[in-house]
Image 1 (cartoon, rainbow, N blue to C red):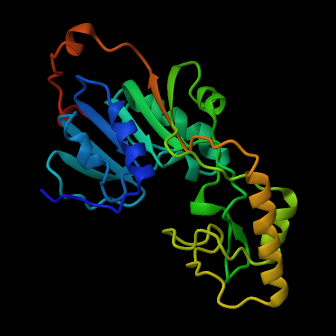
Image 2: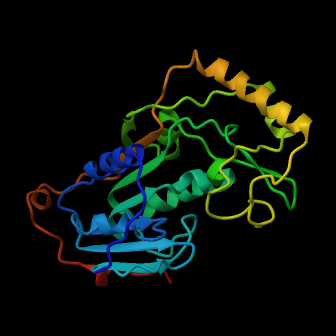
Image 3: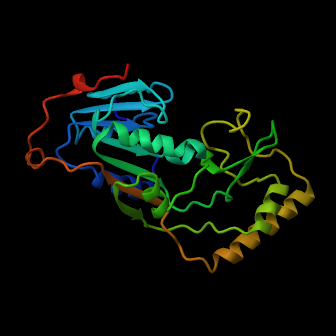
Length: 272
């Protein structure tokens, strides 16, 4: 079995640790939506018999009991109730806003008992933006096009019950003003998240940081920096991540006490 590693900050360790603590016991099958390199999928083998790892391109994961498939969260090619649990982390913030309700409905449809959702908490989408050198369009940090709070998650998965946990270790401050955002845009957004994977949301090209900036642009970015710093001095740190356990139907008591379902991977049928 290949062990998949990533560099982790203390915040990331806290986030992943909090997430794994929410995994329900006694379940047999799980769909990991947005599996990417399988970093999270490899941890799921401790709690599930079969893990189906799904992404827009078929993941290359060499971990025992992990089945890799290609798919789209907005149109899952599985029948209803195919998986005991659906695991969806670092995905919903990337889905175009008009497709978000459809994606949440699809995740709910294929789950038998529960869903585990992970999204950034009340992210300020104006902070750390990027400017594409090719098309000139402004991109949100990390390609995140949606921001979430407790009410939005409950609304997207209504009428199901959602138990929400906030990851608060460290806390973040990301307040901006209309003026500081305007100034940073004029400056070419030099301090955006240019090391993020993927390209421009509009033209698909890779986005390197601005190579050269004028004196006026440098003055704009410096002014924006100090405006943000002044505002954040009065801002209370907030949680930076939110996890939700959403129950679709109660888990049978007999199974909760250790009786595993007999239908393993062979019972997961693709829709015709």
